[in-house]
Length: 43
Image 1: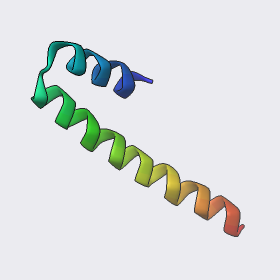
Image 2: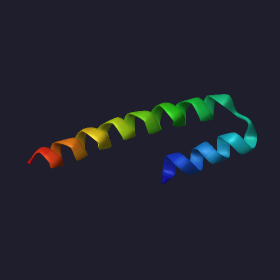
Image 3: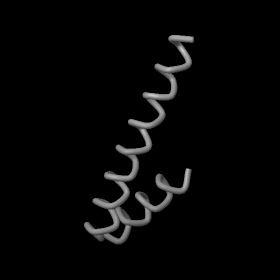
């Protein structure tokens, strides 16, 4: 939730540093979530 709000804030302000940081953070969080869900599915 926090990453998406910061991403929207960066888009509103057209601040590419905030946008890039949050895209990277969302990608990492998505990777962790995907690994966790895959791990739960195997069990």
